[in-house]
Image (cartoon, rainbow, N blue to C red; front, side):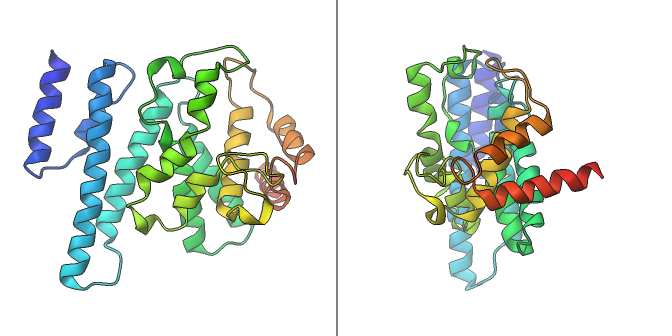
Length: 259
């Protein structure tokens, strides 16, 4: 009853134009599923309303520069939701931030310009946002072989994520990084089975960071690997599962960190 009362109060504030991240308090694992799903939907609605307000403001004032405050607030809201999603599974808590940081370091190692590095970082933060609305049991521990229902939902999350973010065009190429971070150079990835040069570089970078973090984190289906073992796996499959140039850059980064 307390959760519902809080939700109704927040909805009333939103309807009055008072946006805040208070809605995020109801998207955690301790909130009952019906209330949490409504809260997640409200959070997405706030993001879309802010995006429309951004466009309206730009048209009225005929400004051509991004409104940094609105962009920052919107990215912050979506990033908070992504972090809450990861926190629903104790094995993936902190995953999105670690992936974003690793992806940023790889992009820097590859000599990308600052604006491109920032898009890669944002793509890393948001890469799993398509898991919004996943029911609780999909986040619960399972055996090494994923249940078919989980597989079907998981392979759709890059596309769902890109659709959620599609109106936020100031995210630029980060939208495609979200959509394509599970594509593979050999064309055996998902959702579109893109090959090598058809995969955006930022998505390739995020794929390496995402996989490395998954391999070096304790999961229900595997023990955490050492960084050396995880890097060896990345190198062994460079050019097929992961982009070879990105893997080499990541290897250089790890070497520099240890020195």
